[in-house]
Length: 327
Image: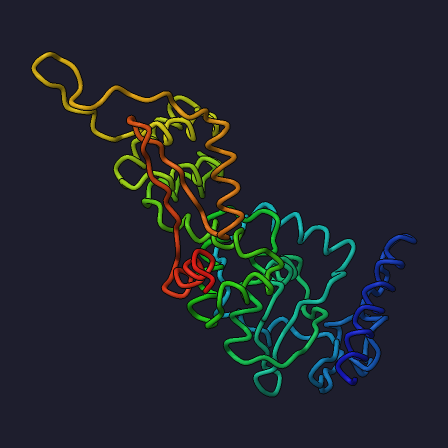
């Protein structure tokens, strides 16, 4: 109950700050809204105020000198121009949303979330910033930092995939648990994780927006890494659409041509009529939904073919086998 009341107090403070901003500026900002954060000696934080104790699940102003970086921060690069723009905004409006910290000791705090706000506040010359103090162990620190990172709107697909992988491996989460934590269904999480199986050149291209996630997902359909890189370069050079790449993959891009006999004809039976591409896509979508994993349908030249169901672990394979053989 105490934690809920503190969180309600935080939300009320944020709402009040936003209301003040709409009326024409923050004035003294959150400093005027967070009661008990300071014993006043001056009008603003950093002008002689004396910090008092901040219990867990409370909100208060903390000296930026007492805050150390989050060692589990998954993102190390921040756009300097965007940081400066945020700093300029903070100089005028103040900080609306507090950063989140955990207390390590007397006047010693560690950042959980809000790295950009902290850096921008330092650029703006602030001596103290509003912060929400909460309790967290190392694993919770990592998990919260990764989840906050995932929820950023400007992350690329590779950054998201790497964060998912770290949550699975370092926080000992299962894919179902991970999906619940980040608000995504299991198939979405699986699709991102498969991107990490692509060759480094392709991952870099996806990271740098040379190709889209749709292109990358199509490239996963090729088994040969060399063929994946070759098709990736073709995509970039010829600006191929996702649909065109999917067609090339279905038609066996990168596979050796069939050998010919002495008469110059292929050593195989006459080719059967091709299965319409639209029907193949419908079948793949239906099977993917059925198994919760990527399914590929590859027709052969003699009316034969294969169906491939991907799995990520022994546990995942057993789940698929149970769907195939419920008994």
